[in-house]
Length: 389
Ligand code: SF4
Image (cartoon, rainbow, N blue to C red; front, side, top):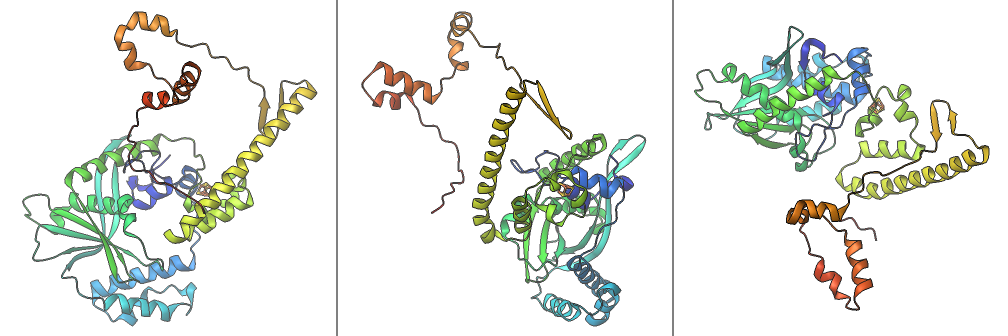
């Protein structure tokens, strides 16, 4: 697939997703190659919702105030899109006023709404870049080697601190600013420290995250791997993800259209929920999951009956085919021969299941504790434990 303008931006990354390349261990950035293909290769227009337009207008007004020192009302009226009419204008003005009257955090703006690029690698004779527009770069004069990179979020929902762990956009902006540090701190001597912050304009607080050089170097590698994956991807498969309920392409997406109604409703509720609302939704997700599992089992039974009654090898409906597959396992290890060959190293490879040990203990001794003396507890780390009352 293409990377338009040869520039990999946060929006393109979140549309395609992390492609199963973990940037944070155990977390795959959600996204969907089909949505990416439709948006960036087929160039389908974005359907702009009112909240999106209002958010953009507030961003634009902040930029005008920072760059041209115009009044708040003038800034908002210049950035306000005609299609919104007066709807929500007063609320946006109040939102801006609250944002601009927040306590001074001691930082000074060096640049706002600045477009930055960093070359990543050559592909087909062209340079592929990391790119993006950074909302604000700032400096605290008492900490001259630290650059702040602010990303304004105008959404009504407050964000928990936990989002910072997987916030790749912050890493992206920090990377762009580090690689262009000469623009902001000429003669800085060494690579400055970067602190990226989500600035929640409606809620008057910021969520900060500092990135080390090592993390930003790893980010570069991740970007290169992801860009290579996008360029090499010729199968735009749909991947259901929390962004589906906002997706403009639902009506032409086979994955979305084949979701049962309860699954769609759940996706929609998940997209708009905060942490407190999400926790009980897991129980519903589990119910939908087990209901779907039962449906699959029932269909399997019915299909097997039908194949046997009709005495046919396969049944095909639309583009789905079901048949009976004869399964053989032909690679069972001869343990005695393996032991003879490997000697004591055999014990490093061999493993017994807990169930097998318990069965053996039950059959060979009346001492019920024998199995527990053979079973050694193994620490598995901190795991979530879900209970329903
Ligand atoms: S609705 Fe379909 S196309 Fe849209 S993001 Fe979800 S899976 Fe992808």
